[in-house]
Length: 156
Image (cartoon, rainbow, N blue to C red; front, side, top):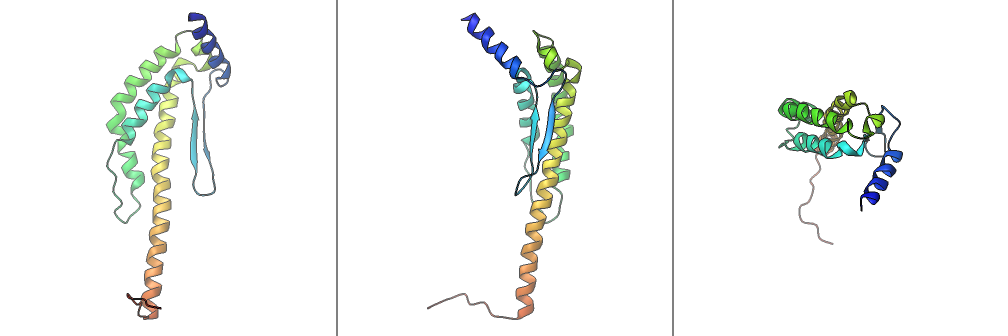
């Protein structure tokens, strides 16, 4: 059984990114960008805990572009947890050969990138929702300008 675990660990380390690096990219899709952040699998549960903290909030659309501010407001609320998770990540990266995958002192960079991506998602929501909101407003204005009666009961 231990040989299977060691084999799986060796495979994971070989599949990991280049030493002392992690990547984060915003990829432009047809509709909206999505973000990819790569980091050693050993700190994945810790990064997920931080993301859960950031995403645990009640957000409201108030007819103005303020999602970026709402998302940014999550950062101070999760700061204490982030510091604990960075410390745990540094300890985890010092075990075995994980320090070759990502230097323990760079663990904080992963969490800062996750925070930046979180705020960027809010900015993207602002862009998308306001585009829809303005399109809807434009449709209402054009209907009002035509002075046409829109029938509520349509019969053939």
